[in-house]
Length: 238
Image (tube, rainbow, N blue to C red; front, side):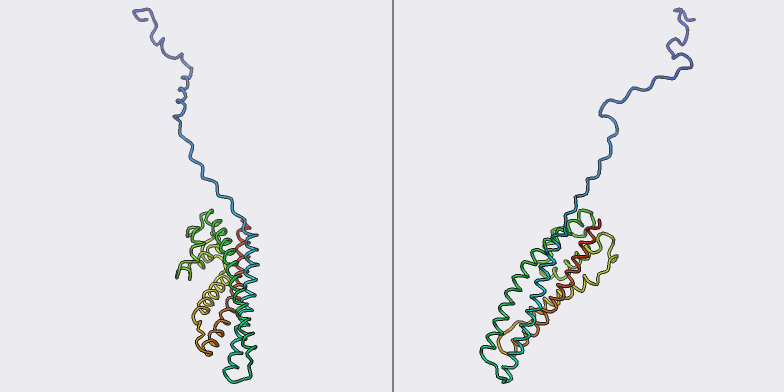
């Protein structure tokens, strides 16, 4: 007993009972939950636009093959005229008219095809970028086709990214891809490398080279149709 008549330890908890739990922390002072990762953007459909691109490429390839034929035919007509074979003015005029007609149709088809294909290419590359598997910004899916010298290689490398589809470079076969790209580039260079009409011999040479260039472009178109199918199938499978 103490002098005040109270037993020692009266302020302590009764023996054998657990201490009360600590009070909860004030609201808003707890550890915040980690931020959630932003959801992946919904992939854009590319199958329908890819089909439109394939049709446009097919039409352009047929016109390119036709253009090769009329160029070769005109070179033969001019060769006969140069060598003194009986060639009438109507034969020369008809050959010229055929080249002019096919040239105009081919250029128009090429313009329309280019617009549709680049729209598809940009959409497919945007899907790749939304998964974080791209090596370039999506703007290059359009711009790379128009920058001099850069357009000799960057679109092809970006197309390879689409073929690999984020699985690592070299994991997918690229024979169709690089066959298309080589024919497309070499055919384009040949078509612009010699274009002179100062003499009959120069026109003959120009038409011959142009015919070879157009055949290469037609072949590139066939491979491009196959390439589009491969990329559409890969992205559709995800």
